[in-house]
Image (cartoon, rainbow, N blue to C red; front, top):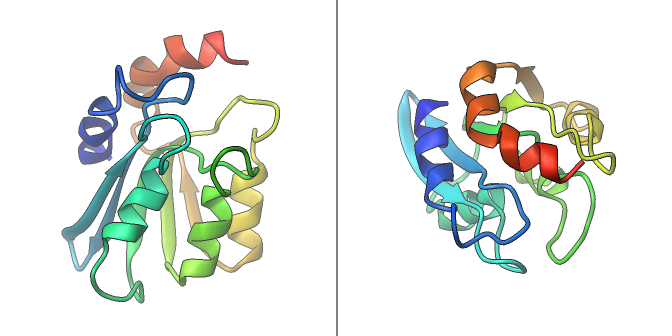
Length: 137
């Protein structure tokens, strides 16, 4: 998750009103892909990491600083993309308090059979994203 935080910080200043989220995909203890929130209308962190992965997703885990979005806006739902990908598990730093999400992304993942763990380095993630999230809820 610390690598996810580092990745998310790359989005600061470019992601507009979107949160500066980071995502890393891990296979067998090694990071195999990374992503962060792009400019408005571009990939979110999860979609960037999925797009950059060269091999399949069997036995891959995602570490995402903020709950993957459940809704379609300018970009497709990240929770649905992860659910369709075949990824085995998702570790989430904190739940997204945005009323359009707020647990819905987690429910999508679990309904697809993805193992989900919430709260990994939650305090650090909250420190990184808290000011942004307070402005957008």
